[in-house]
Image 1 (tube, helix red, strand yellow):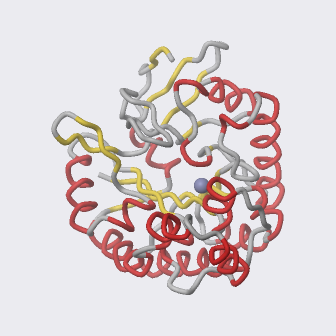
Image 2 (image 1 turned 30 degrees about the horizontal axis):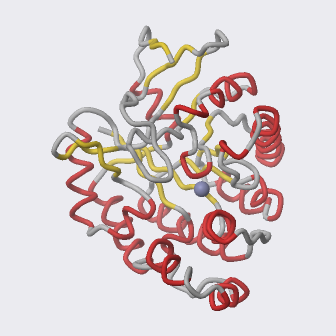
Length: 291
Ligand SMILES: [Zn+2]
C-alpha cells in the first residue's frame, strides 16, 4: 500500500497568531528553513510528497516553491492567507484559491490540481466550497476530516478517496484525512499536532490499521519539526499575552523535537507518494456519490 505524504507550507503566524491571538504578520525565514529541512529528509529517503502552499508564502519566497517543484514534488494550494473557509464569502474564497493556484502555476510552470483548506475548514456548513473549487479548476480536495472535532470536522463523512457529484453538476475528488475507529468513534491520526503529541507507536499502529482498508494520508507543517525557538517577534508577543501563553505552548510548540525522528521512522517503515499519485492508484471509475 502506498500512502500519501502531504506538507501544509505555512509559518508560525498562520495558525497561532491569527486564529488564537488575532495578530497578523508576514511569513518569516523560519518557513523557508523548516521546509528546506523537510526537503532534505525526503531526498535522503527518496520520497516524493505533496506540498500544499499558502499564497503569501509563495509570494514572499517564490524560490522556495521553485526548489520544491524542481525536486519533483507535487504543488497544491493551501489558501492565500490561511483564512478558514467559514470566515470567507463564496466570492472571497474563490478569489483566494484562484489567485493562489495561478500564482503557483506561474512560478512552477506546472498545473496545480489539489487543494487543502486552512485548518480543515470544509465541513457540513461550508460544503459549497467544493463547488467553488471545481469551478476554479481543481481536480481534487483534501480538506475534510471525518471526525467530530472541537474546531473542525465532518462527522460521518465517507472515509475513502472518492469522486463526489456536487449540487452545481460538477464533480470533485475528495481525499479525506485519515482516521482510526476506536470503540466506535473516529479519531484523528497521522498528522500535525497528533504526530507531535502522541508517541510514535500510535501513528504506526494507526497507519497499519488504516492500510488494511485504504492508503493513509499523513500531513505535517514545516514548524512541527522545528527545533529552533520561534521567530524573535513571535516570542515577544507570546510573552505579552499572559494567559494564552500556556495554551499556545501546549498545543502548538510542545514536542516539536520529536517530529523529525518520527518522520524519519515513518519514511523508513512505510511507502509514500504525492497525493495526486495515490489518488490515481486508488480511484476506480464509477464510484460517484451524492454530496
Ligand atoms: Zn494550515
